[in-house]
Image (tube, rainbow over all chains, first blue to last red; front, side):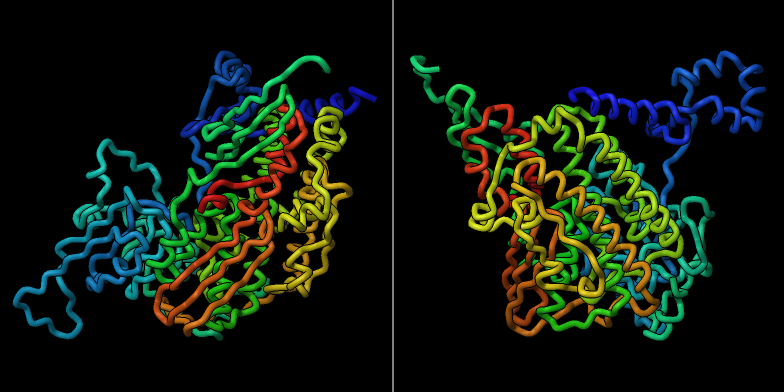
Length: 223
Length: 368
């Protein structure tokens, strides 16, 4: 019979519209539309007492005019901007520049007239990463033999000019040291979260030793 | 209509048309409302992936494959790394194979959801069913973000395994998703499969017989909708597909509705495959000990996987260097477009978009 299928479909749509557990959350970046329950939770009140004490805000929330600032959950392995670069570990070997599929990393080291002793490293004059062309594949991080370069977790780096998108060595030094756990199992082991956690200095980040097969077998508990 | 003299008229559909799923141009000749000829014109999204691959080494090419079929990056990665492993004779650890199959099947579900959603979008059910499909896809993309830090351009696999093991909180999230997915499909099916408008618009529309489908070397759900039981996962089991049990759903007559239904059934089978993988997976290494600059011996290799759109194969020739001498992609979206003219001929203008939409192409893969 014509019409039954349509009524059934509309029923499902209405169910999703009305039942609170099945409602789609409308995410409006960077803010999210909030229900009165959300607002009450934010002020640590009972929902009913909040409805009575703040009738105007509750009414606005019911028609979708109130928003709360909330970020979408982001995982620790997110590959993002503002590379976390540890100056003291970098030797300027330019592995990252060599491995980059787009060739957007430029490294110049100062070798003028210094006889380097074993254990010392070159002075890095230039370390430009042109994130305007970067595709965040993370191969530079995978390549780094000294774990000096890590991906970051940010994604809000809009600028007006392309030249501002080139991260130079000063900016890398000053940037927040919040390394992503992409290709850094030692951070995953410590359950470090760059989004919630604080800045990590070099001692906390540690060195990624290439695990042997037995270690890999032991590292991850059987599912 | 006898007695009225009509003149054929040629109309351009695209390249910038919302229903062409990208930049695709279709030159259609109508007689009245009837389609008498259709000529696909593509190449608007050509980026020269195959040529670019010749200037990159074997690990760097993984990032290029993400951008071909951008709705199914995992399957592209899998097809590519399998070719390199065949070329360089690399043994892959077992756990890596399981993780690869799990992620490829998740990607198949995500891709089929997109195909279903956009088919309904083309039918005129603007946005509502699409959002239902996107809700599930969103959870799969969240899992991918957990797994490899990106949602679309994944670059997760490497020749010799995957780059990093799944984090520990990945497995409970996957379990809860697997539990929810069948209910999602039930809800989606009760919305669509019995809907009279969908049935009236898709049943017996855009017929493709099995001989025609084989003749045009189609593959994937479109071939199976025509009643041909051909699935590379069964016919030539790769990775660990010979250890899991699953059905190959086929359609009855090969119309647009069958192509939709086969995708839904395939998603249910994918859930079963993931469930079995989760039972069988064991701890162990996830990456073979391969150098960054892989230098395979001179030779050639072709390996194909059953991607969401069909047989996705890479043909690579090595001359012993760090970069391939030649890379050729057998893109299923491109080859599935071959019978488009036969399918469209004789149908009305209103059927054009849904017949075209039911093939489920991605222009990034058609043009590469």
